[in-house]
Image (cartoon, rainbow, N blue to C red; front, side):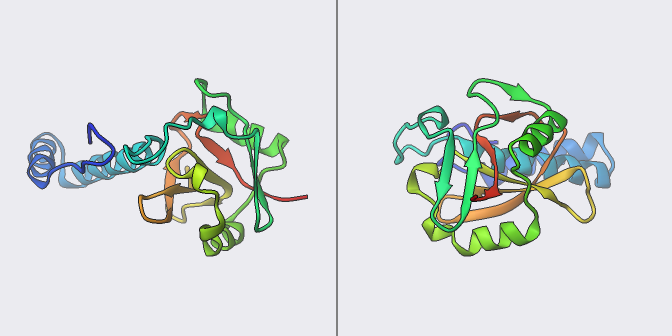
Length: 170
């Protein structure tokens, strides 16, 4: 994990931690835990503002972000609130914000058109695209520092105001 969103975990610390996990857990379990920590680190990097970016919070963004390439991302969770995966999915469905693999791929093809204000502040969620080997994970797209990146996130994790489902514009 990092203490600052611009400083990656050092390889030495990562190796120390991996060795400690390997002592307590089987290789497969340790690998799984490290993967989960990497996912959590990636999610934190997506929502923590970089020091070079303005401190604009998600609540300062419009209730519905209208993207110029035919998509919208409505706010379904208030800033400061955390909801469960099933609640997030239900709210996304109520907002008609259900999208899958095709929409995510199209979205990424137009990533240069995503407003700069969203970088590091919004995580776009594609509720219908599930990881093939882990159906409890949905596709997300977050700002990776240089570009928008598709990743997987467990539905069991908490979801907050930084997470916005994607829908086609009407």
